[in-house]
Length: 204
Ligand SMILES: [Zn+2]
Image (cartoon, rainbow, N blue to C red):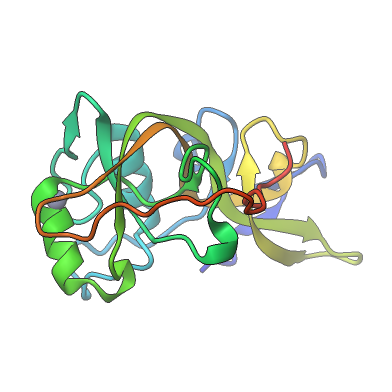
């Protein structure tokens, strides 16, 4: 939900909120979607995390399920990833994968394996360097005659020249220095066969 407060900056060079405050942008100057805070309300939804919670969990390496510290060992932070489809499997998967799901702690990883339909048979990966890459969200462009028109949802790397027309809703990290791992009682890590095409990525 974007809200009616989204508008074009007074100088015509990007998006703004009519009543914008400092916290509406991150340190890269990217504008973030506003959400209504309603702690404790509603059922947990494992597909779509609350924007503020997602960003906080990603930056502070908190478990995406319980909000406690995510599991970390010498191989890195623990991420639970959707197993790649055949066309998504690349040699070295998931090295370089763009990810908007924060890490997990081990107890939640085990629970998710058993109870969460959206993490059906997840692949567990240890990531030494989850690098802040950019944001997931959507472009809004000025409509001739006034107002804004929404574009497709997309990934946007920080520093992108069109960032001023982008409304972010999820922080995206690039997973680097990855090691596929198996948690006790879960399926073994997937093998990554060669010859598959590279995963499509947003232009830099
Ligand atoms: Zn947890």
